[in-house]
Length: 251
Image 1 (cartoon, rainbow, N blue to C red):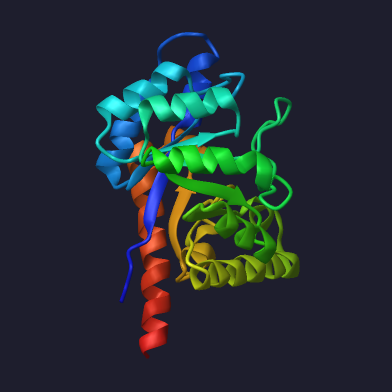
Image 2: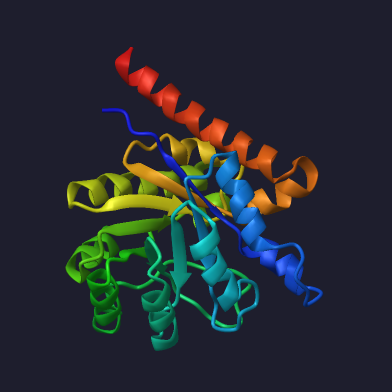
């Protein structure tokens, strides 16, 4: 059966621009509402420890004022756990976080961090929050996600996005194999990080990947074409890639 691939739009960097002058504009909640109207299936927002972009009140307002599901990105800390339990977003994606990093630099170590992560996964799952783990496309990490009881994984595509030529092909093959393994062991598979108009099609065409989360590129592109136009074009590229591969299979 054909599955429409979902698009989650990350609004973090609308908040980055707002915070450059410590004001209220541009409003990431308004961006989330515009994204929903343009065809986003969900909104992603990462509340970092240092509040460098998204703030606590943004999470509250997105939860209350945006009809699409919220994917709350968070580090595995007690502070973030309590915020998640208070707002009860549709989903919470646990990501690695380092204060000095410009952006998330890689996947979570679900293997080595099992004992630390387990209570976070359990408590949020018990609260009805759909937990996902942002991990590398590595079978051991996928198996660890199952052991932790997380129903969803998001594969880190940042390395793929940075590479070119044969090296990119090798990394793509890792992602494709990981997505197939995820489905085989009962995980819902998402993907994201560094995706653009130029590199999204191969990832979108992976039949086992049911959701892409894209943010920085779309917010940057919105400067030139508007947020509505940027999201609609990305949605179109994803749908075309999916349709092309489905057509090839049925031919």
